[in-house]
Length: 117
Image (cartoon, rainbow, N blue to C red; front, side, top):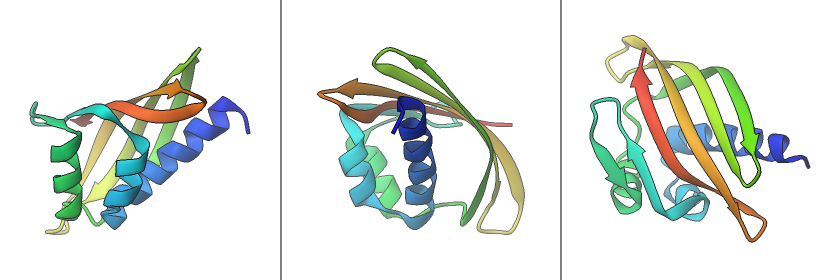
């Protein structure tokens, strides 16, 4: 599988893991020093992100409308755009950038940033 196909698959799995509150998937695929910058500007480390994931998604639906992968050697950027439905039924959109790094032939997410559009 090409690097672009691998990152594209990981991006889809990332979204699916969010919707399923799949802590085990994130624990395996996030680097130990992973950070996530939320849309409100707060920053989560990996442990905080896993706890938040376990609480379940605040959006039971997320449709990935667009995702673009850019590769720079052992670093990959994913720029995505999607539409979500909140628990109260209202809809919103977000853009995100995820950063992956390859170490010992394994890609792991090292950073995520989410912006509500």
